[in-house]
Amino acid sequence: MQTRSAVAPRGRLVGATALVLTAVTALTGPTPATATAMPAGAGFAGAMPAGAVSVDSVSAGAAPAAVAPGGAVSAAYGPARAMPASAVSASSVSVDSVSAGAVPAGAVPAAVAPAGAVARAGAAYGPAVPVLSWGSCTGPQDGFECATARVPLDHRRPGGPTIALAVTRRPAADPARRTGVLLLHPGGPGNSGVDFARNSHAALPAALRDSFDVVGYDMRGVARSGQVECWDDKEYAAAVDAARGVPGPGAVHGVVRQGADFEAACRQRSGGLVPFVGTGFNARDIDLLRRALGEETLSFYGRSFGSFVGTVYAAQFPRRVRAMVLDGAYDPRLYAEVPYAYDAAQFAALDAAVGRFLDWCAGDAAVCGFGEGRPRQAFDDLKRALDANPVITASGRPATGYTLAHRLMFNINAGKEIWPYLGEALRAAQDRRASFLLSPPSPASFDFLTVNTAVECADRVYPAGRLLLGALVGAHAGSAPLLGPPIGLGPPTYDHNHAPACVQWQADRPSRYEGSYRAAGSAPILVLGTTGDPDTPYQDAVALAGTLENGRLLTFAAEGHTAYNRSACVSALATGYLATLALPARGTVCADEAPPEPVGRRAAGLEVDETRDVIPVLR
Image (cartoon, rainbow, N blue to C red; front, side, top):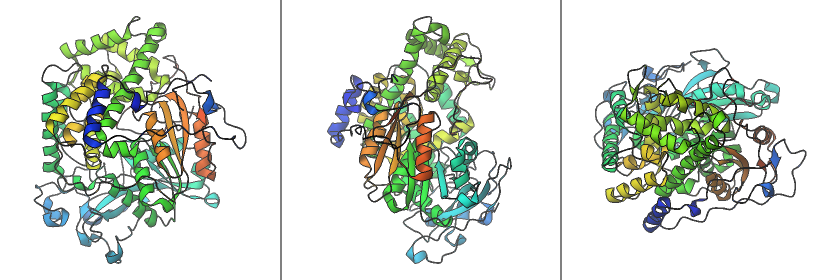
């Protein structure tokens, strides 16, 4: 089956992006050559699923119910807003016991408890294993049960203060066939793992639902596990409402100033938490959950940012991995250690994906319905028109060209099947009619975006210097003309524009993982990469599979972000691996992406809400 070429490897980026990489190389040292695609294997054992082809057939360049102590956190995990970090006063925990230095009032999360809140037995040898008291969950009675796990706030002080993590599980449907625990980790960072597990369970194949206890948790700093607070809703709304799709003069200076303001708000409102939300500590939390669940090993599915969490877990606890699927994978070294270069490639992948959608509109104007044969120019004109005359939404807030870009950044992740819906939504925006692309980020979005920034600032170390920051932020925006300027020069929100806050980040980073990502001695790990991924470039998956000692790459030749349950071929192979440990043949490529679907064939559209991560139902 004919496949679309992958996004350009990082070494082939051109224009302003290449200048960015040159500047970063001068400051941080050369980026290692990206791993090449694995050669095609000698053959697939058994019949290859429909849609699977040899890597050789891909065109050149496309390489393939308890209450926590003190009542701080409820174990009844309903859909209510996240518990703010300031929900209890700092007096509930002594300032000295949380972090060194002064912590502003209200900066200690409600989920943090004094050192004596959990049993101290064995503290001299490491943290106490959490005791999980399972009870019913709030909301629909869907077979899940909920509990709270208390883990060290600072894993360097295992006997010190703790933080409460919300945990949920649904036992295996067939106890006689039970294999163990399957931990589902969502993207983000910032999405609720409790919600991810509960909302995704029905989409899992029966082979997994029957054989595994499906488990999810809200990682530290997220939702029910002590939500990080930085800007409040009013401040965040003011920032995004003032942002523009075509930023004017002074935008670079403005974004640097906003980054400093956001960082100061994080210190003021969550100063006792943000040093400890990094992925190194999150991975240690997972291993404590494994022990609390009574498991020798874990099976793990992580998508998008969850793939980085899985990578760090495997690196720290390689022999505790039974099976692991990392979907929409990160290149861990580039992400954590050469972040400017990672950002440049992410901007390039996003703009390339939007460009392919607009080129499809140009070639199939009747189905797309937007642009009248010149969709790129029409898109630029629409951003400018909305900036000049915003649409006032039902909430009373303005929808500008920035709103359009922000929503398209997330919705392009759905792949080709959403393209006609995007065309319809863009045409509606032209006509100033209601459109899911004209929905300003909400307070729920702000909760997600706050953690997204804070966790990545805890994980990543950018070279210091405002001069370099301004130069590279401007270069990134210029290298991606469709979405680069609004996203790169807008307020702190999603992955691409964290540099202005992270360069000015003053909190310590004790929770950052620093070490090898080889996961030496682990069981085989399956890495899923999508060739046209707008969010985590395909080359990240290639690099991760080559970095892991026992990595195996499975390629999905398609548009969109992540692969599992977007491809029957990928899902069959990944499910088979999780259930039986049988890996797909080296070099396998699945090429069965759903084509663009005419509007009206479904009762509802396919729009993406960044606050609700879910494994899709396989079509």
